[in-house]
Amino acid sequence: MTVTDPIPGKANLIRGLAGWFVQYFASGLLVPALLLCFAALVFCQIALLGPNVGWLGQLAGALPASARAWLGGASNAGEDVDLGALVWRVFWVLSLGVMALELLVRWLRAALFGKPAMSAAGKRRVVGSRMFLALMLVSAVFGAAMLAVPHAHMAAGASRADLYGVFSALYAVALGFATAWAAVSGVAARLLEGTLR
Image 1 (tube, rainbow, N blue to C red):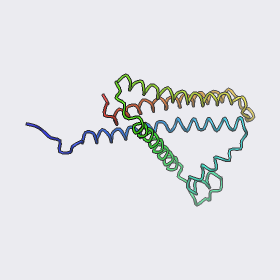
Image 2: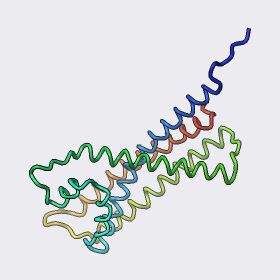
Image 3: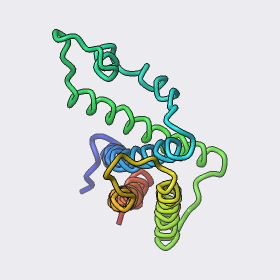
Image 4: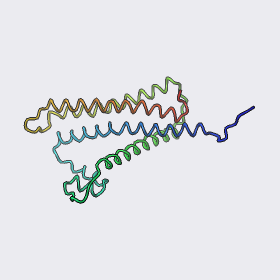
């Protein structure tokens, strides 16, 4: 007696949906690392070039009007800003953007070069190289921030050693998120390819 699947390809559909969900989760892990790197780069600009960061105003244009007024210090008493909802929306949009970018790169690579058949060792090598690149990028950004610390103007009573400690802690957090992203993104890639074992 043969049992036929009433929905052909149901296993592939479930595996694909699980892969997309895991990819979204991986993108959510990458967003904090990217934001910490962005903050370190803004610190570098302020420390080396001065406090003129007018280009950040262009980023504020994407926020709701009440949030822009609140950030500018001109919020009326009647206009409350739900910062938790605002941060959640920004995180959600950034996670979707990172996921879309990762999937676009995957589709372009498959369209241009075809889908290479890889062994398990080859897949581990891809995850390892992804992890290596992410860790090198985070290390380079925070290395630049550490080099910029001596040029930073400090408030009275503050010490540069405190800044080194803060950037060391932020570096460790960013490394943790980048490592987690590489590992979870590798699982998502294997799920989407149907080779998770």
